[in-house]
Length: 90
Image (cartoon, rainbow, N blue to C red; front, side):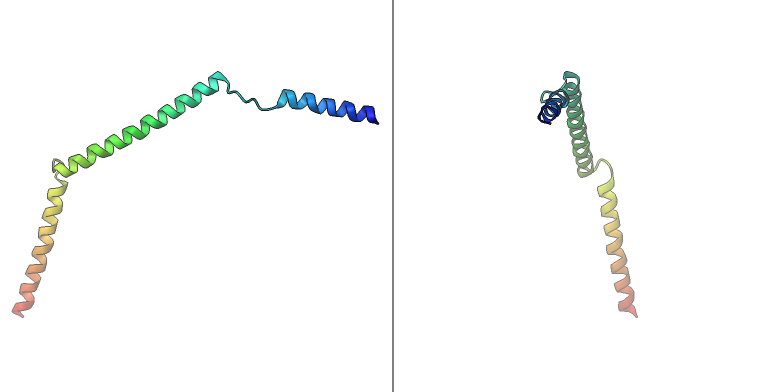
């Protein structure tokens, strides 16, 4: 019985030694991880730069969006003033 227990424990030891997770990364796996991180970083940088350009374009008025907003605001104010004049006449 003692021999069987010794034999099983030695098999377990051999199995653990050959199937234990490696503490060092495979060079191909390490390069892949590096490339994934690089792509993520570049994608983030590109999105932030695009956001900056879009915001700058809108704030400079080149897109016409600010002018459209001003026109809509003037129309709203005009509608309010026109309506208040109508109420005053009645």
